[in-house]
Length: 350
Ligand code: NAD
Image (cartoon, rainbow, N blue to C red; front, side):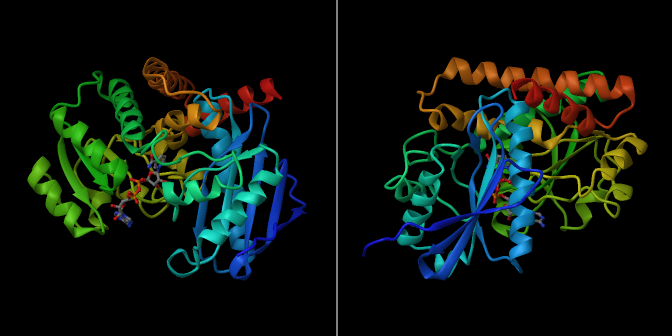
């Protein structure tokens, strides 16, 4: 089959450097590629494929996610800007090798301003197909590999920092931790917490994962909605976004929230709600930076270096320490402190 290069049409979006609508993909599909910022380097962020209710919903998702990547990449002091891509379609029935190759052509047409990788609905094998058409792709089989163990380490280190500020010691031995989600990151985090002597209370939609957690970590299993009201010191949301909101925050009894999921605050006001409840929130885009740190050498064409990776994880932990210290000193919500810090880094680089 011969592939025709898709058409790239720019959308007028004031908040982003460039947003293109990729039309003419196989199967009658289209995609969006959003470049939020290249001030610190090429805009890096994964490709997501899912069905959206409307074109506007897909635009909203890609804009929000690409902005989030600018925050995450700058917070981790990586030489990367923020970008993201979405293909509007059903992964189960519409993902084909031709689609992946054509998307690769679109990425290539951007000349390296956007670097793609895996996100929801994508696999390393899909990235390998994309790489037939562009070199601006990471997450290939046998390269940087599964990012979730490193993401979990960053969350674990962040949790220790938050515990130091809130409880006077970073020792998690005996701490009760409520975990929402035992997937790739959640499982590794649960393992580290169990090893550190924490008591785990867990929930997930996946019953097999819960059964395994009972056996492996002696975890207590609770229902999906019960997780918020557990009598715990720490809440670790590692499943989905927007779980810190006007409905759930009044239910929390914990003193620290630190998890892996992206966009945990449903609205910026929810950060203030947590402050008012005396709950210390470790901002998600700082805590979960381990995954993109792990992928950065591959994205920028360098070899993995274990010492560099360790140094970056230590820097993530120091960064979290500075953010939480400043939040407690100033009374500003931690996510606002972190965003101000990142905005300064991005504008310095611009
Ligand atoms: P995953 O899909 O492997 O795991 C998510 C888990 O959450 C699954 O076990 C799933 O069954 C469970 N789940 C889904 N909905 C739930 C609900 N309503 N209540 C409870 N559990 C639910 O994903 P992951 O790779 O572990 O990532 C977890 C989160 O961290 C995601 O939000 C992801 O975007 C974010 N994140 C992941 C990485 C990484 O390295 N994988 C890096 C940065 C951020």
